[in-house]
Image 1 (cartoon, rainbow, N blue to C red):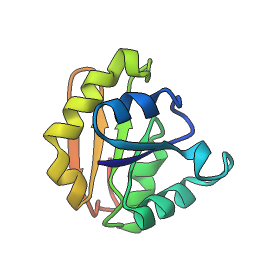
Image 2: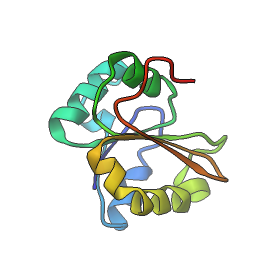
Image 3: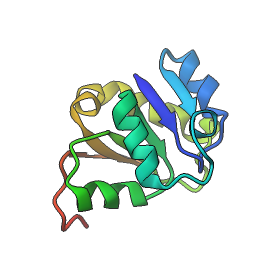
Image 4: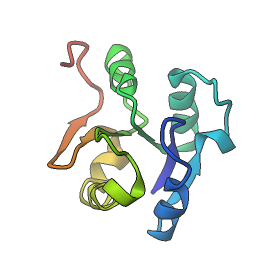
Length: 125
């Protein structure tokens, strides 16, 4: 899977995901650190990447625009590092690969993954 890692996550995710068989780039290597979330989403859609973030705004943008892509994975932990939640992320990438390829928003925490298929309704909670 091709993944772009948002600025709010460590570049340490790149080698972690790459070693697990994914193609991963950190946003800082492909775009401006000051880019708006909409710009990250547009790039990811054009380049066919999943956005991996710790920012909840991506879900709101997907809902407001009723976009069908790109897919977004939001990690919702206090410690969003590969050492703390890397296995959770890898398990979700494997388990929900089909949904991510079709278009989905996945919110992850230590206990569960919530998968919502795109497009999202405007009244998303």
